Length: 580
Image (cartoon, rainbow, N blue to C red; front, side, top):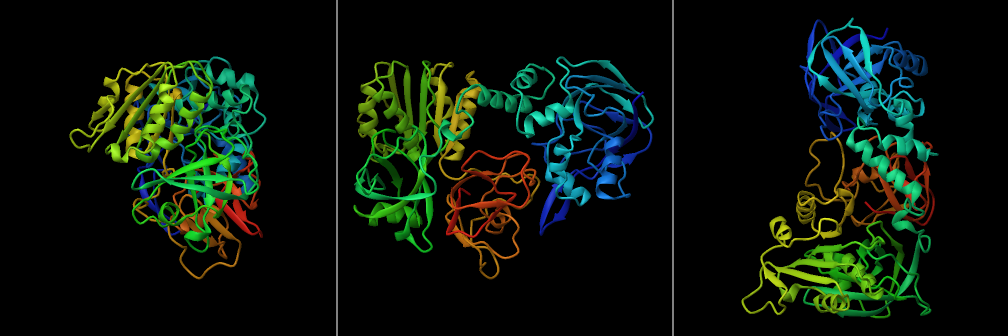
């Protein structure tokens, strides 16, 4: 009979780590006597990162004494005590190979249901002083698992663990963990996983995406197609056309005048711009033109204090050569017959304008809504072009909001005063069965996504492209807001030049850095990571040019043209470029 060996709790605290501070609750210690288990937690317990740990779906973490014994032998250690893997319940029995998602157990007065495997997280490695542990938990098939609370009550060490129900489908914790984190997935197991009601919503969503990638050819690749070319190639500036006082459109062609490969509507182009500084800064701009016009167009806004945007909009001349990586990005117009919402603010209209071009070029019969916000008609970039495209579509609707227009300045009947807000969007009566594509500032994106969700939209039908770098994801780290990218401290490195494209930082790979993630952190480049061991793929980053080597093999290789920067180091080559 399985039994409860220890109940472990601990409140989150600040812990020094690699010169930074982590707020974490991974330090758990045994408690003696009965302790109350409640719907969201055990009395005396807490989590530092509630986005990844705790809550109804992850109220209690379970780990087995058999796995303790395995790790003692693997690491040659005899100092591992109950709670050291961050678990609330140390148990005898309940192997990850035997316990299934949806299984139910009674312990003391409380009842529990298994919801998901442990989330891979660097903090368990930090707790044990074994940084590679998150990857080992997966590769050795010993993750442990979370449970939700079905009935509150007291539990204590020594209680028997009684199985009171079996989950549907008999998908074990170990199989579920491998299905998410390891390659060679079985589509039938993916279908089984998404059918288990007890599986937490986050894992359900991940498995739906993996199932779609397995069933739809090309869905797993960025934008559904391979890059048109590797690294950078030279493109010549054919025209620079001022669109208004702050925005200019730049037309790029092949030096030999041959047609450039088609892009997907919504993708972006990454440029290396020698004229804007040395080393040449790298920036990414959404394509604003028809995706198969034989040339590329970007529309760039002159940002205050923007060195590159100032050069492109005021100094760039036809005939200049720029280096460009192939169009990429997965914010692309999907095929279908249902309604389409193209929603943007300011210069964020560029990728959705490319989508509008594609719809018009195919004489689409879909219902198309163009919903855009700008300060005034003077700053409504490419408004006439968008209007012309919309008039060519038989089922189009145009709604434009001007937040600072003067009386008599509106021009078009469709224009309205005020900002494009949640309430204004809902008042338009947009069809809830539409697919939405949104681009603009971060706060705008959040508001519009919330509005569409409140209006009954399927979250899977709402696609967004943050105009600029993605927000950083550094779970548990404190004091990370408001930092601006900069050169790393200390003397310059002697390795290959590394460029973080979206942040505009180029620097030699420094001596003593083991990964590109560590270099990005030294530069305060916004980064996204969780496990730091190549398991979760949170840190996946486009590799635009050059080569990388992995300090240790990832459990699953990323797609071509992508890199896991937590394990990547720059190799000797002319240049390495990533979107940071």
